[in-house]
Length: 86
Image (cartoon, rainbow, N blue to C red; front, side, top):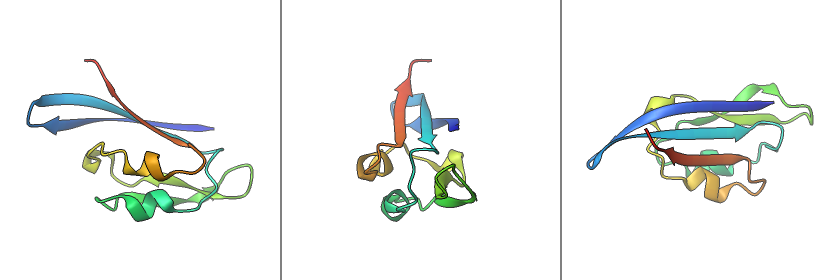
């Protein structure tokens, strides 16, 4: 199961769209992403993936700055953040 979220982030140079994707089946619930998020908007789901892990989700996508700290820290490469042309 792939949890795909999209959001818009306003920046000084204008507004851009960022796609945030969590591969919930790849996530092992280590919480590294949660501990590195400067906005503290990542939490662990109450649901379990097929491997029995609580996977990471974004509590409020509108608060995401697109810094990519979560994706860089993820040992399972379960998080992808990319800017998308409008």
